[in-house]
Length: 154
Image 1 (cartoon, rainbow, N blue to C red):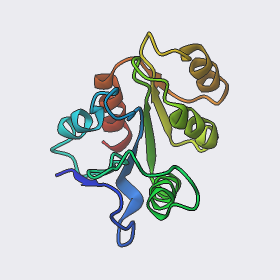
Image 2: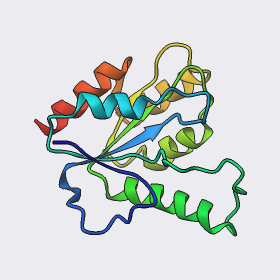
Image 3: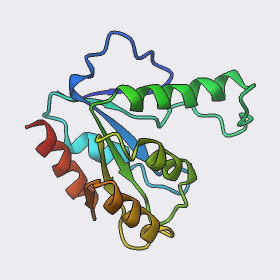
């Protein structure tokens, strides 16, 4: 059975050998809750999903290093990606996803990435070039992304 962990849950006592970080479009109110769709598709797997979409996010939090709630969130995400076995990224066409673009650059050389960048994403060409250069597998749909997760762990 799939296990989902979200911030601010501590990343201690986790067996990271079968973990997938769900990086990608969140942009509250703009991006679909694609993470839930992926988790539902993986219900019968023995995986731990690290989902950065916090249940109680406060959009009024100042996005500053001096804000403890914001800093905890960002550090949780960076720590989770660093420790995860696999990182999947989804670039929703209705978003700009600047943080996901940043994370693509941070983890391009990690060997952990699989990217889903459907037609219509505003910087699809940039994503395609980075994926090609760093030999990052790229898929076109969320169903294909879920299949890539199955393929990695089956």
